[in-house]
Image (cartoon, rainbow, N blue to C red):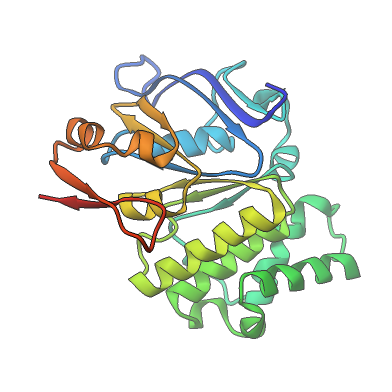
Length: 262
């Protein structure tokens, strides 16, 4: 596992203690450093559950999830937070914080109780906002900016954690097409420039094809295909998993094919 920043080995998960309804079934997957991964699949296939198992939000059995070769069950919440940042689907925040304060919260795993942020923490928050094109929003109330801007601020917070792994749960599902492209361009640029590993739950197959280095296709809690986009997003796989006939069209503007449903 030395080449992998995060791995799952025979990962099973059920929301019932009696294993009546298994959401994940024997998941084996390794995530390499510096790649953009997309997890795709129909509703109910286990995408978000897998993401939550990988970052410890759902407690899994021993010897099933490993972060930098360490069993996640042996790590404290603070240790996990120094390795994995998380961008949730819902970015609504109940408190009236400024965007800069939200990003600065990404430094919390490195602070002791009641310790104030250092100049270095402030600098990291600033550079994270610059990297996500949100620095101009620093003094604005987080709930008074647009959904696309707020989502980029949350990505900036995740970036400020300085983690080798960033997990994103359907980050563009509530955004218009302009903000979808803007956010995914931002994440793609972060992966390229900082060599972190981004693992994103996606519904839009064309977006997954365009931005991903690797794609994991789930169905009924199992991995049915994993690899580069062209190997995973085949007409046969899409038809079998989504029960939908599609045509794959090459486009000179993109390296990936365009998926067109019949």
